[in-house]
Amino acid sequence: MKASRQTLARHQASLRRCHRCPAMHGPPVTSEPVVSPVLLIGQAPGNREIEVHRPFAWTAGKTLFGWFARIGLEEDEFRHKIYMAAVCRCFPGKNPKGGDRVPNREEISNCSDWLATEVQLLKPQLILPVGKLAIAQIMPVKKLDAIIGQSHRLSFHEHIADIIPLPHPSGASTWHRTEPGKSLLNKALRLIKKHSAWQALLTLDH
Image (cartoon, rainbow, N blue to C red; front, side):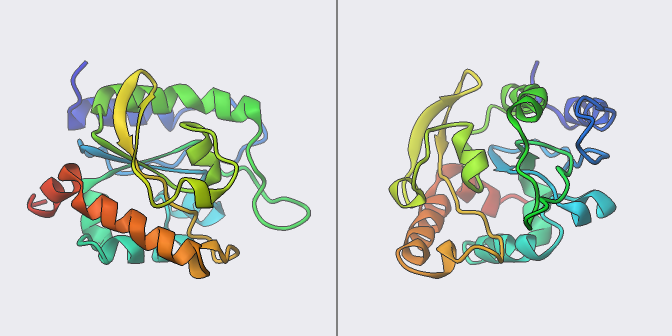
């Protein structure tokens, strides 16, 4: 099936009715149903994203969209031009030791077919996994230093695309604000900016 805004909207309507994971807090969060050559994959929404029904709607989002503004797309334009997905679409809840709970294997598996469908519909030229959990769905990741700042040509859900991983923009993380993370992030952003799919979006009216 070829992607259209209508097919993506129908897919998202089904996704928002999902209740597969009893420990997760919904409703599932979706982006705009935009047909795009670029796919961003986050980890999982926080409680604020559940409230406003928008991915990356709080402090981590401000940092993330600040990165993309540096290479030509402000937040509003980004949301209109790039499809935003996630490993899990519901809020996992809080970790008793602090921070958000990391989704378990079953929850990740339950949600994976939604992402697989999006990859097959969009057939993106460029995929941007944000954070270790998202990156790990596509490639092995032990240390961010070994993979950030590089473009990887890989198959994901039976579709070959360029993968440019990004660190998670969480305020709790210092990786992207200290060396070598800061320089590797800048290198990754330069690679994204030069990619033909990103360049096409810069000239596209929304």
